[in-house]
Amino acid sequence: MSLTDLTIAGAQRALRAGETTPLALAEAHLAAIERVNPRLNAFVTLHGERTLEAARAADPRLPLGGIPLGLKDIFCTEGVRTTAGSRILGNFVPPYESTVTAKLRAAGAVSLGKLNLDEFAMGSTNANSMHGPCVNPWSPAGRDLVPGGSSGGSAAAVAARLALGATATDTGGSIRQPAAFCGVAGIKPTYGRCSRWGIVAYASSLDQAGPMARTVEDCALLLHEMAGHDPKDSTSADVAVPDFAAACARSVKGLRIGVPGEYRPEGLSPEIAAVWDQGLDWLREAGAEIVPVSLPHTKHALATYYIVAPAEASSNLARYDGVRFGLRKLHQGGNLNDLYEESRAAGFGQEVQRRILIGTYVLSAGYYDAYYLKAQKLRALIRRDFDEAWRSCDAILAPATPTAAFSLAEQPDDPVTMYLNDVFTITANLAGIPGLALPAGLAAAGLPLGLQLLGRPFEEETLFALGSAMEKAAKFTHKPGIAA
Ligand code: GLN
Image (cartoon, rainbow, N blue to C red; front, top):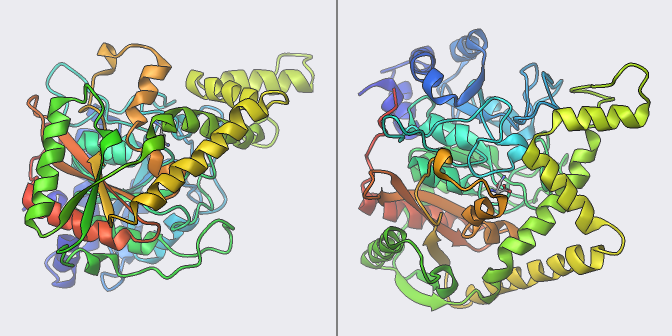
């Protein structure tokens, strides 16, 4: 088997048995990137020498010693350019390292470079990036499909065998939707499970870091090293980090799986409906019990999210003023206001500008009560729906996305239609609960379809157990056409 086809668990075994070395793994991945990345545009910053140096120093006895990973370009990396996909950050080189990536490094992981994304993690296609779009490795010849977003580069790199795993973030679905579109696994942990320190902020009450990899167990191995309390992030939770990988082997017998009727709207794609039913059958065969549940406020989730997220974004992005760092634009003789206006107009892309406008509007005096406050109330009701559901079930199974990957060229150029992509994923962010996405099958067009498991706060272990059981039944071993 080629080194780039290994799982993380498999690579760990090979490294510890002396059958390969961190250097050989790093070199194999760098060669794969050189060959395949020009077609995919998944990696946007590479630092070959730095990667090789880290590989030479890596100790396979460490939890992730010698495992080559890609990092979404929203994690600040000391001494390595971090753009968040935005011109406004330009060639920003952080003087510090995010907590999550520092923890991965301390666990022995080797960074291959930084991965493409939608600007400030806003989007569902990875087309909103200063680096240009990333291409889905499952694209058929002559028709480029989107990898999903915002963590499109992470999903594409992992699917195409350019990295054994990757970091990502999920504010409204940005781990689960690209994972589903690219046929890989990914988990958005409970809000607070991973530190947000050093991650470029989008919507602080929703943002959460998590891993992507080709198996559920690999996600468990990565999350174990990424998670944990961090005094530098006041919203990071001071709870123990369990052995997630051990949970993958747990029996799911007797677990109750909720099926929310609200997630099966009139007109749901028959392919998605079929894969969902298939997933329920797998869990039933593994000994779980299927029960109907109701999440009645789901219908308000999109509207709620697209008020809360832009509101927080408009506040977070106020810091990009052209003064302290990043892009600066000012015409000869301009004043301070001109500096702000010109820098922000030139630095932010269209979707980011749209969200700043929406966010500023819903927070403005006179509209605050009508929009922002109402959205907060709805958010509480959406959270309460889940609290109610947990009385009758231990986890929920639902589709991850309403469709398989699409081609941007064939999409209507309408932001609201684009927001519909998030219909199944955003409730987990609004409620703060964990969500695990995994590939469940192929659509007729040969594209991967994903399902997601949602769970109680800090019960990721249940999701890992259920996800592993489904993975065993799904036997998803397909490899995309564009891959190493
Ligand atoms: N598509 C959603 C948005 O654009 C989710 C993005 C995310 O999770 N970062 O806001």
